[in-house]
Image (cartoon, rainbow, N blue to C red; front, side, top):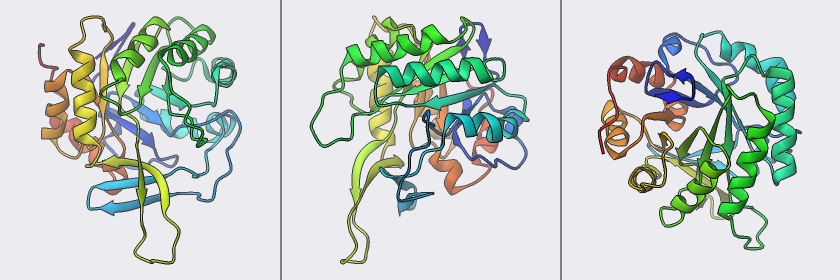
Length: 281
């Protein structure tokens, strides 16, 4: 996969990487994407708010604690860089100034240490029904792009909305994105077995997300206006799943839930799938 001047050696990438990533084989990956961080730490009810809904589907709590960009750079980045593959920092913010601030910090404190950033675009979670627009995606992407060096890649991760993702992707492309990622989490609710426990709001990942994410990749890859390469992400557990994303138009995949459920899965799939190339559309 080509990201500007950077060529990924493998179509299999690790996403939401554990801060204390241990094991072998990660040096064969195309890239490592960090957990999503904010400029300042975001307090939450859960330190590790992930529930296994079924065998291969996870619910990631909305009010999970988020680590700060400063702690990432000072404490966690060296561990992730020791495998010798490109590292991308996943970032999010509530508005354009927030994206600009965190991108400026990363450019200053870690510009030579990272291959770029992933701009995690999410629907505002305020309960007021705000709409996420292509204009917001364009301005957030542009704010990040302007703060980074020209060589740094900007990957924009979009929500799992097949009916809207093309417009949002065009916003990212107009804002200077290097690539797209489809998709982030699907909003959902999990009811614990304990009938007295409160429902758990969050985002689905894993098996339940894959059919929607595949459709999103398909939508992006079949729009002649969109010229950016695509990461497929959501429910990758086997080599066949990697192939499915490539068949739909992705150039690479990201694995997060699979690695959480089966540590070392990403390295194994990198070995199995390193020879694969995207299908011609």
